Image (cartoon, rainbow, N blue to C red; front, top):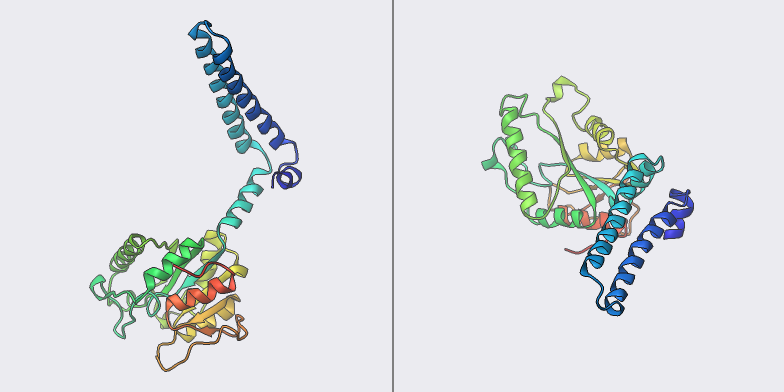
Length: 274
């Protein structure tokens, strides 16, 4: 691991120099310990001074590392690699019918918002596997005059609080308040919300997935070329076999968000457990 860093990301012997400074500190600490045993009668001030020198050497090492991190031209690349390793993928989630119970008359207040079974478990599992979650949702009830934008934001804030309480995490929520008649660029199945998220959050769509409950979500997945899991609205639809071909043009079915997450983790070869 050190050799790869030395030969690629840090080509100027940076690792060697830091390691040498650390060795100096360790060497001084070792000599200090041995001197305590062999230099009987040495004034205690000597050991105090040596301890101060060791601490100064350690501070010098830390200071030099911070200076390197703030000025070295290869650090941005190193941090990008670290972030890429940390986040293993992105899952775009529809809201109504995936996270909460969908209503024909729209969810217009927090009292009408009801989480679906095992949602918290699924979101916790995504966080555990370092997968970012982004919600993309059509909320035309705002421009239909059925609720205010402030009410929608309040619903989302309370929803996020509940998710965090159960050890899950949602990185961002993108919503479209427009009606179909307004012909905006953000209302699903148009890709406006996904493209904005990609730009805002520097998302790699080649490691992204979409979970929704409607054909609009399936069409959106095709447009942005990500794999999709559709949660059927009718219980009669059978979930897809995990052995079938899964492509952006060919979504699979999952009976719940938890089952959809299982398919994604299996596709990414990650931990499928809670």
